[in-house]
Image (cartoon, rainbow, N blue to C red):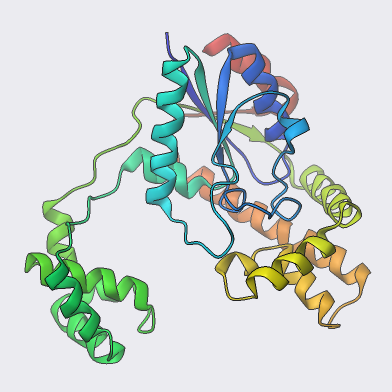
Length: 297
């Protein structure tokens, strides 16, 4: 019988090794919940498991796109469906694991399906976007509740709101009220690795040291030369600090310290998000969690 579980935890908490060990024992494939691991060529900064570390376990959600390509939660949901279909077809189970809890939350709650946009609507919206400020003001007047959540210079989200309005005649709020999201995943067992802050900081510091030893500086030089600094992923932790080092703003010791500090801050945000957004989560220390999971699934 097909089984599906999720393991959530802050970055550097040991979930990669745990998931691979479990995958062998559960005969499972893995779907990575990591917003940086989706990018090809960002290997060290993302701390994605190497081919050797994957130990023969098939992974989804890794190396999907190049750094100058866009990625969003809709694409991630498509990857989940692909992983689930593959697992069922091969008679395997699925382990969803990672630190980007937003992706998991979106699958549990579901997403409203956007309307199909006609070429005529695209043309109208394209003309409206020539004056972004006027378009924002129009939408704000029609749907203040929705537009207060969008920055006045966020051209992508303003475009999407315009497309809904001109395609359906409804404001975004009205449209999403009439097209409520449907969960993508139901009855999912979620497990969380419990880590005390001091231990996690030590793990983060060790991982950061290894990143620098393994060549994160050379990786970022390559990424900047090929993709410039424009892609959003070039502002990610590890990459942003390395760019400051290359600019001469910080030295190598400061580079290591800043990556560690910023990663620890990210881990704290991830832990807060996971605790506030997910119900019925089984929490246990890393050393005991594998045995517990195997006894429950």
